[in-house]
Image: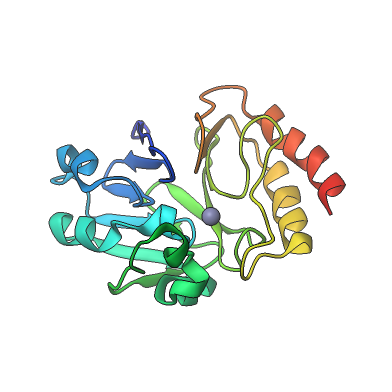
Length: 200
Ligand SMILES: [Zn+2]
């Protein structure tokens, strides 16, 4: 039996977070919104280093006594304000220890897919048993996808990453922004795959 995926909606500029068992995915949401889960969370996984996904990670990690993980190649974004877009949002770049994840690593029920393009170190998380894809800012519903014109973004990498995710038997899409798609999500991923070449 899989853990349910609990959506904590990101308000204004903040990205969505998801609680799945002992894991919190992304940490841009308010500390208060995570408090009900503080006893169960011991791991925080960041899909990438942009501040709207990481703004409260240090405080949430402290409260939950959680270990923080981020894609290996996004560690610089986690540390440098110019790359994390912290300045843009008037926030401080998180300053907390983080472990790194690589393609093929397993976190809880999910496998890590290295999906660069939106940032060079973006990761997506896929749960094979029910086709749940936590896509960060790589793929959004309705054929949308993350921009690649920000620091460390790369269009060619984004196309490759979306192509790779389009191979997966995705059934639900848990996106970094917007409303998650809880069933029949494969068509949304295929629509992003169809749309992204027109963007370059
Ligand atoms: Zn982002």
